[in-house]
Length: 89
Image 1 (cartoon, one colour):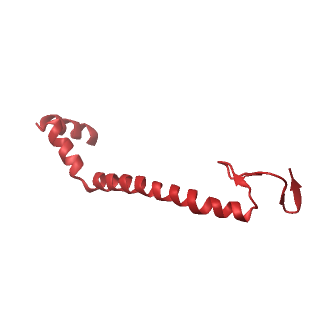
Image 2 (image 1 turned 120 degrees about the vertical axis):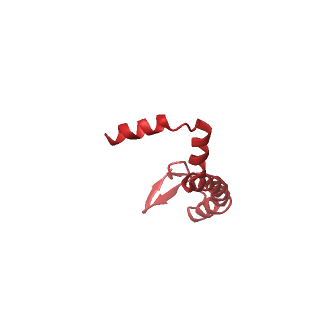
Image 3 (image 1 turned 180 degrees about the vertical axis):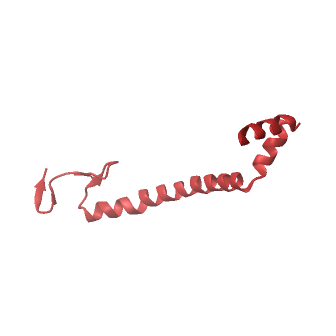
């Protein structure tokens, strides 16, 4: 019953779609979401640059020239490497 009343009230009110959209945009939640998306996109670039220029080379030094794939698995560049005393080619 409550939903029917809301529908009837919405039909009776003669607000246009533009006015309703303006009210929706004016709510704080939408603006907060937009700011969050922009900050998230900028932060992604910072994290990508930090991992590519600092963290990955540091891991490569610690593991003795091994690199990691997208899943974090070690990939030997050349020769053998050891994990828990077990040598791998």
